[in-house]
Image (tube, rainbow, N blue to C red; front, top):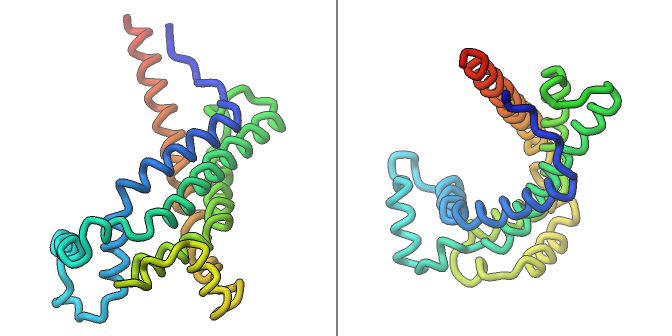
Length: 207
């Protein structure tokens, strides 16, 4: 029989799945986050900056493998709650939209509502975790003992030097990027699912 649209998952399931996703992806991403941060904050001219793999080798040689995982705890503190809030918010908003519209499936939601839910999910996620992103960036950019400060110590340093506002440095840029990027991402996911389901339906009818 033709595949039916999946029923919405409970919000608690979305939260748990998002949190687990954040935990796993952080481990894979952290070495590249370290290298990206170092290259972006380098004072070297563009032509003198090392390549991605050259920078990976340089950090591993000078700081050991642990250097590639500098700031991992801060990345977990950012990505685990971010993914939980991100997917949980999207699921909550689309569920509310379905109830208000009297619809049974996200397949029936218009594209602008998918974009709105996805964009707001990104804004909520980044607003909740931006302090940990700031801390992660500071830790990963540091070389030597400074980079070994724990999360709470780094937060206290930022608050003492810059006030609480220092933890939200870059918020405007983050949410201005997050809204359109995540609106487009969820629209692409939902549209792809609809197209694939339609293709499977058509294939089943041919049989």
